[in-house]
Image (cartoon, rainbow, N blue to C red; front, top):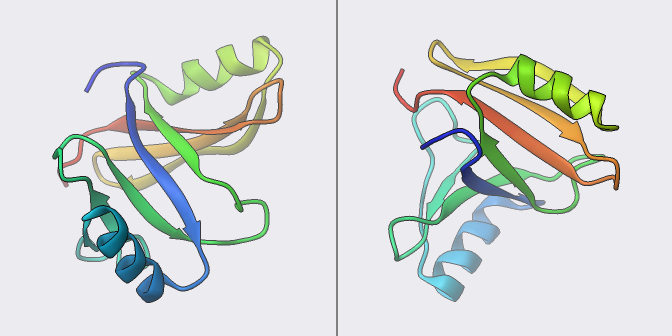
Length: 120
């Protein structure tokens, strides 16, 4: 994927098992949790392009959010803030080859950022 591509959509849920069954039946999504990420089951749409994750619902995360791939989280966060946004979560490691962060745009929308590779 390239800078600016939406990598996936996170859907907050209160019951992971119920949500996995619900979305698999409703949309035909293939839903599996990568090893070590059992609380973050990933879904893949039948088109094998669209995908995302079912994520535990928590305070402040009650609506779906898009995750956008970027070349540099630090540069993107700086640009987001310069344009009137705010940082919600600074760059944090997912594993040895990838990182994520969150910002809120001037309209209050929370957007996730992804940097790195899916290997590791």
